[in-house]
Amino acid sequence: MPVAQVKERISWFPVPEEDEIPEDLRGLFRAARERIGFVPNVFRAYSFRPDRLRAWFEHFKLLHEETPGCSAAEREMVAVVVSSANGCLYCLVAHGAALREAWGDPEMADRITLDWRRAEALTDRQRAICAFAEKVTRRPVECDEQDLVALREHGLSDEDAWDVLELAAMYNFTNRLALAGGQIPNREYHRLAR
Image (tube, helix red, strand yellow):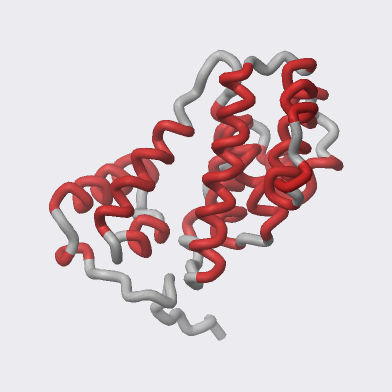
């Protein structure tokens, strides 16, 4: 007997209907549908505060601009390391899917998402990035200049190290909004890049 499908509540806060949000954000929703086939629930949940969705999304886009020193896959790797440390279901599912796509090896991406320490394909440089992102998340008061030195020793420029720091900080922020706001990931993420 099939399981009954119910409309899933995606946030504990009010979630406006798409026709209730400003036109520019409806454009963001349309662009997401064209690019990935659905509107991420984070967009829907954040549309409760339209100006803040705009600001968050602009910051998100800036942080995910690939640079020669920090690839798209490494940026998603930071997202899953932080989200795993925080136990954030939404971001683990969403960024796990993005990591599968960016990494190009779904099995290895899933291993990184679940436990980066046991993902044997990571380079020493990538392990240093993961360790730093996790430290920023779990023990930020213990961060010191030696963390930057360690990243430099693994070939990261100061700009790359700042990107890792800023990504980790942004995902800690986003994880807390998702966790404390009751955000649920889209079911579609589970099937992406498999």
